[in-house]
View 1 (cartoon, chains in turn purple, yellow):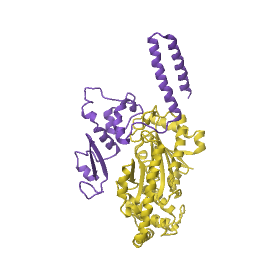
View 2 (view 1 turned 120 degrees about the vertical axis):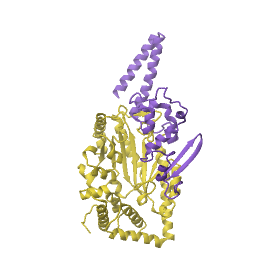
View 3 (view 1 turned 180 degrees about the vertical axis):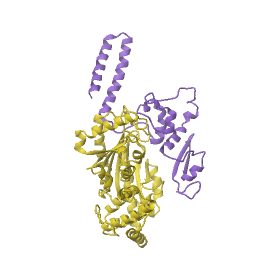
View 4 (view 1 turned 90 degrees about the vertical axis):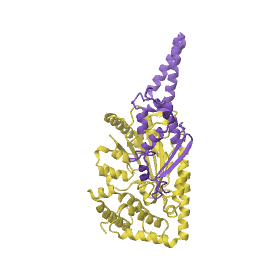
Length: 172
Length: 362
């Protein structure tokens, strides 16, 4: 396929842009992309990162001003990466970024993969630990509830189960 | 085996030219991206954190369970020179990113080079399995077993919802990228390739040229790989890729047959012209070499040219690259010097007709 702009060089960049449900496709060569500054700025070192950050900037949530300067910027509390930094680099800083940036990532994953939920392999050991950790969280909140309602016998039961699970965690 | 041999010896297991459909599928590659939960991703890690990751990963690689499967040797990126790194990239054992941009990057290589595990590339761990021919399932079997061994000892960054967490959102979920290297000269000659490439993009797969820039595929070599890593199981990803690759292989076979039946003379003319030039040229640019070698490969596959082993072509794919030429010469070379050496090397190897045999200058 030849470039839609110059019609001479082969189209090396294939972009699909969807704005308000309207789909526009571009098939252009790199030279024309550089010249067509408004749509494709910063093409000089074009990489997957640029494409990704392009995807993120089309995020309608940002357009509506949800991330205005008055609200606290969304950031990962472990590594400090902000959503703005992420949308610039297209790379996460640590595994906790996925938790802190949370649901805001759903549209991005949907655009890249068409999905948001993993259904493949689950690591045997880490997967097992994950289950225990979830159970622990539940038990701990139950423990607090029982303490608050002064049901100490049940609270003690929770405490023992928590200890048991914590031991199991540290052994594996 | 010394570290040097990985850089001196051009031979990798993937070049063996064996395995199913090896006339069209040169090699199969599977890559698994994994990260450790308690460490920032390599991009943000400090030097000491990155060193710790290297230490942890190599410890597991030396464990009993791993040694039973693979004897791995480590090469640290800051201990090899730029030319040597280039050679490793040209042999597809490491990525350009690991060679040029990683901090405290390292690679663990198996003796036959079919397994290469990159540490501190974009992700903490990237397990790569590289096999000759069309062998997706086998590559996955090997890769997933290595993955299991690592997982026994390392705390992976894994999330029930998102799966294996990776530095780049394009790899999250299964973290796997499977690809096949395809030689598709007949589809290019019959101008069907662009139609096929477009169709492929619509089924969650990507194709790109292996050498060369942009959509131009030098030597008619294309890499077909999965794009989607989240929301599909590994088995589905692999069978999807397998199915599409299978169809492309069949189409290429049909196109080859068509060319033989309808344009035999001009096809053979093209093949023999290239053969003649490869045997006699005194200087050759890499672009021309790629095209001529592709013609010769087709000639061998079609039985038009006997007595040249396709293995030589796989070897030349790597040894005619700039890094390898310079490594072999033991010095930096100007482009003109490279073109001369490239032409000489091609003459030698094709005349020798068999690999690992150095018979001096023609």
